Image (tube, rainbow, N blue to C red; front, side, top):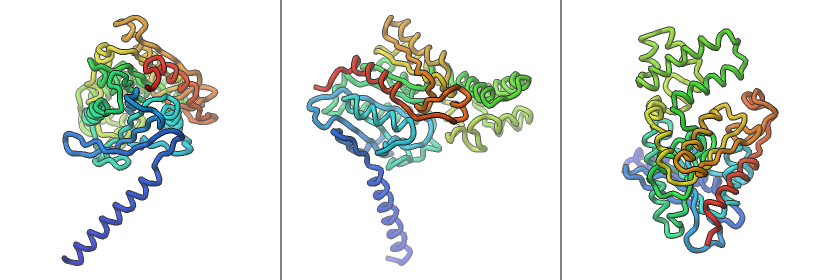
Length: 356
């Protein structure tokens, strides 16, 4: 064995030990809750890390929640004293729902293999679909009492996972049933208005964004291709929120183009279960009407099936602010998921009941 091979083996061992140490530091602890870390082996061979929590004293088959997370490549692990609103919200759901809660780290996040930054929408959807399949097969889960909980972009995966499936319910936060292009346009208008753009610039800027999104999302051109064909239109790209030369919100262009191809309204019409659509009053990421549309679709199919709830003064990240401008600037706010969590838990109790 050469010195080079030995050195490579030592480096590999050191990296594995470091990764293990990081994983140990991030292990969750919840009072009266059992936490287990597992592996979901996907059909393409990639292994994803799973985190499953359940009441320690519960026996038999439990009601379950499949949590489907946000757009970014951030971990779904919960720290002991979470400062961000998403982790604070998840901690309360894990500890107070009396349900088994399944979370799956995205590719390349936590101990999962792969690369989240290059993963497209359809691949991520299929990963969550396989997680749901495995959740149903657990001998400690009641397959008739599974709720899919989608947060942010996860709220667009939720109806696609639940359509024509025997789930007990679907709960979403910060997502809508309009198309991705419509959501993008509303997001851009919100950003322009809330940052105080001059009124005489709004119409021009939104018209340029409308033209850009038509080519980018609907005709599936890259920003470079758009710029090569029309320099004026191409110059819009750096002004759009969350863009770089190679990605959008940290995800590849294909992710957003595939999201535009998804028909979320049609998927919601195929959900045969109660639906809870939650919206924060100061959530500039999504629109109230797009979230309300989810409940309207559910109720059109079966009156009373869809519930819409708006949480006063809350932004996308479970913090409350005095007004919309402060929420946009993320100033004068306080993380407080409780007003949203209390609505979630009340609805979940009606849908799932108590563990046996």
